[in-house]
Image (cartoon, rainbow, N blue to C red; front, side, top):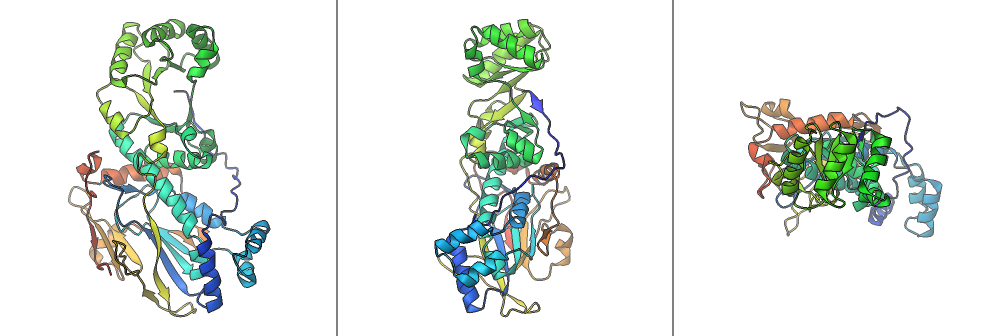
Length: 449
């Protein structure tokens, strides 16, 4: 595929207010807490998941950078306040409080690209109850979506075994979700995206050549190939399955010569067709012409092509929908709060106690991942209070916001590289696509309530 490598220009991208990415019950809780005098109690909320999606062996943290942007841009503009007033969602004092809203607290959590397991304290938001509770929906919306896509991308990257992967799912999801999905896929191991908005906003390399419509536009397939090569050069990628694949490959090499960059196959039995096309290209002297395959791929289809002479993959629907698991079931729970409003008031653990598998662990958590002599992770260890010395060098959480200002922003490349390291430190069973339990056990030093 023809790739355009975008680098961020340094110019700011305007991000609209995220304040109404909020469920109404958060504002009704705020209204009641302000009236009761409890809204300003220091509180800590944690994002975690009780279980991984069925068949997943590990999760991938993605969307952290977007969360920091969303919290920074969580501002109630005048027209938003007017809307809330007209809907009678909140009262006058609550509107006044929202008008001045700025998050001033602390955010800690797993850095983007890290892997996680059931119970992992993926994100911790600390501040007053009021300023933290209103962030619940936007935080979960971002992390659940992006982490699901990144997990699918990671599995596909494992299946591809080093062959490049291109994200091509923009037309299979909401236009804004498409941009987020491309970003998450890049963190999870994809090399490029077809979505120009993602390339513009996040500096992800972009890719694309032509569709079947371009071939059908012209009187003959040869005319279409000639037009594309004249415009884009011999290094372009030609789509060869509009009519007859063998005839198209022959025409493509005759027109472009052995310098033809690549051919794309988008239908048929990809394993069989890829072998046929490779043999034909070699016979025609186009030994360096690459083969790109697309057509509703997922990690299993990619794995089935491991022995095929395929050079890269384009993935759409299955990627942007999390390959069957479009959410990670992350939750945002209050785990500690102060008894009073003062800065020095100590935090006390709190936890939901109920039936139905929704038990949780109170208290502010730390997490560590000890490794064996080979550097392979042995467990996800989670505790509260003082960190035992044996785990102090293996802590996973980092500071992301301090006093309401981001301090943990980093490049997507850094998150992408971190994921490769984190995945590489997991037991070998993490690379298996077969269904199974979490590849690491979660060990709570503080038992669930």
